[in-house]
Length: 249
Ligand SMILES: Nc1ncnc2c1ncn2[C@@H]1O[C@H](COP(=O)(O)OP(=O)(O)OP(=O)(O)O)[C@@H](O)[C@H]1O
Ligand SMILES: [Mg+2]
Image (cartoon, rainbow, N blue to C red):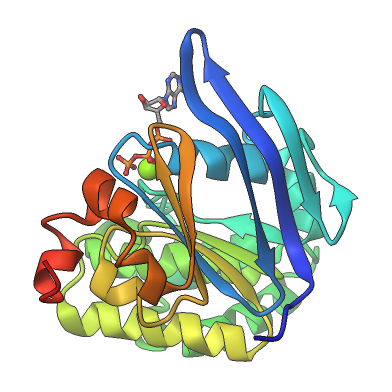
């Protein structure tokens, strides 16, 4: 296997909330043009790790390197400007704005020109299948389309690393397939992705690597085919979910 240069390197990240240790000494890398999925039970610390990486708060200790540069504790807008953008587990659509305007807010990270922001939004509307809905107000969208807008707005910031936090939750099979295809298309376009997801059937086929968290700690890291057979992962998380369905239990 060709080892790709890491675009993101997380070294020994610990995040404490008072006495609660939400992340403990977590280290892994995301290579260029890799899809890395972060999985684990509810409360394992996946979103907390996203928040530390993306600058929503600093980790208690440890280092986040982007292209080898220490970005630990930088404010989120600076990290976003460098090329790391995340979506939110709870979608944050701007209700009074149209879909196009929602996407333009992302594009304004790199331009003050409304014309340029609209052009950038146009390409992303196409890519995310939202063109027909560009004039619909954010507040009247279905949850599925809100999730699409969330991804589209993140893409408008032109990330090199896109971090998706449970963007497939609540979607039907066809919609999940669309998001899987979008992830693959983005990788082809040169992006790297860090994906938090509970839907194993969706992430196992598209991931280059899986990292498993449990109670804040990394318990496994490897190829999807190895992770599904990892005893500790099955015990902590996959058990009656994916493993059983794949007929191996
Ligand atoms: N701002 C906060 N203050 C205090 N505790 C927090 C905070 N954010 C998260 N936690 C706690 O940290 C732990 C990890 O939470 P986190 O949201 O990162 O889990 P998760 O893996 O994303 O779970 P889920 O799959 O349910 O989204 C939980 O015990 C949670 O209650
Ligand atoms: Mg979460």
